[in-house]
Amino acid sequence: MQVAGKVAPAVAAQVAAKVFFSPQRQRPKADEHLVLSRGEGFTLTVMGEAVRGWAWGKGPTVLLVHGWSGYAGQLANFVPALEHAGFRVVALDLPGHGASGGQSSSLVHGARALEQVDHLFGPLHGLLAHSFGAACAGLAMAWGLKVERAVFVAPSARFDDFWERFRDGLGVSQQVFDRMVHDAEGRLQVRFEDVLPLKLAPRQEAPLLVIHDRHDREIPLEEGERLSRAWPNASLWETHGLGHLRILKDPQVVARAVDAFRVSPPSP
Image 1: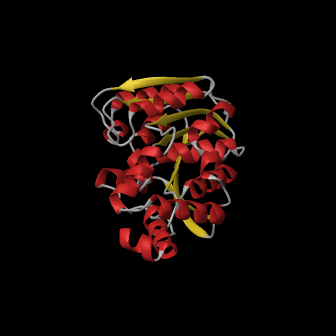
Image 2 (image 1 turned 45 degrees about the horizontal axis):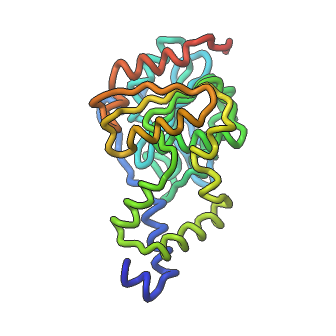
Image 3 (image 1 turned 90 degrees about the vertical axis):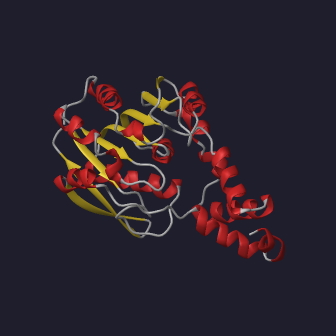
């Protein structure tokens, strides 16, 4: 990439974009698959690609959104708890992830997918999102998606650390990275600086609970702290020793999230 960036920067930018916007697909584990198999499957079309989703139960709708290179099954532990609390639960594999179609994804893909889910299952009483999924949710909400209450688990405030790890890991020069970003902004019709979670936070209306682990090595706790400070009517609950993914399996985290949605739910 370093050589290509000097000899053919346009080609290097295209290669970098393919890597940057291509999540790794994962399959659900056995216990996650059992939960998904209980759900009623549905398919949406988002930006020309088929997006798979599942729905369980009856009542006010709570939408579950996974993170980058994740899949709906990672949030399976929340499904029975929310069902038991009287909610209809909806989850999906974001574009380019899991069982959904597409080879690439982005914040825009994710936000558009959430809009489509709202058209089918809305209005949304609650939304629980993990990591990159929280950024997609924040963008969709800034674009007009109505949510009564939100819970973000391990969210980002900005993407500087992620971008820096990408550049260093792939050997992408700043010039090539800047060109890649410029091309992607034109293709997606957004400015990345304008859709950063921290920039969108002050205009958000839904009450937010941020759950973040002090030992998260993927997205530092400071990101969740910054986002909760910038978001009106937000609170932060700090966990210890759960990291970035095990936090999704922790019974106390599941219970705390369900409690956040239980407060005065509207009639279905």
